[in-house]
Length: 349
Image (cartoon, rainbow, N blue to C red; front, top):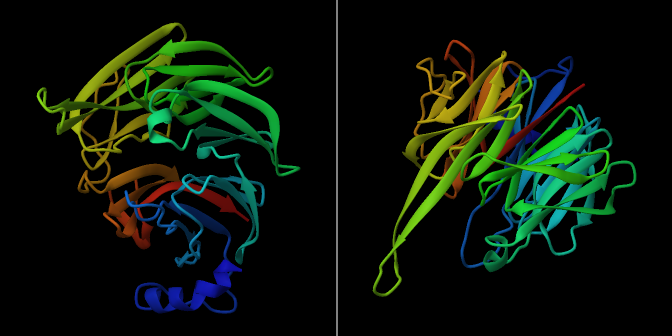
């Protein structure tokens, strides 16, 4: 098991910071962190891993799993992992000791992105691996049967670069990140029943009181009019809200790449921005009660886990950091992660 392989190193690393484990200590949860791995324009690096953090305060990193470990979700005692550039999905069994029994599922040459569990099925967004194709051609959603570990024949066509998903009231909402709309899919028929304009660059979604909140990030690139060479790219952040037939759209201004989390924390919607998260009101305006205060360049992803806020901080192509912060803005824990940590998932015993 991966846990046994790395436990000795973990104990060395945390021995001075946490109470040492004993034979009577029992782990009752795992927080899994998808470490995308190093990025390179020269080809795959295959340095993507998973950091596993347990209830004893230990952080253990798996062996390398492929090129860009992008997203993960937990279904019962099973971990589902999308490995984007390696064009595969991995399944593991989960116990309190760690993960084991890896199953590798090929994706037919498509690059898997985000995962949403509905019943005993995993809905996964896919892009074409060719940069010149996925920027302009519609992407897909494929359905993985978690009983058979096989993809169903049904393929749902989404918009360009489908990214985040959320399930609510028999509908799957999909953010088409290189367009300005969200696809609404009836999971009983697996048909797109509506495409809703929400503003450029929809990324992640969350539900609160029946409304769909969407974080948005989009880019404007300037080229030299004479030779066509690249000059500059401006990144803009915003949010949108779908409330019945009404859609509110608000832009916040420029920022850095990948600042796009939206969270439901104790019934209040928060938006990641400027190195922290901020509550937003009914008009999507950012309020002043921030949680977290980090370098915005480093904040890669944010989620709510066990009623605390977990920040994934990247450090170029070096190991990243996980910060755990409570509602009073007190930093509770600090863990070393792998390279470019992003998505989270939790398993409880």
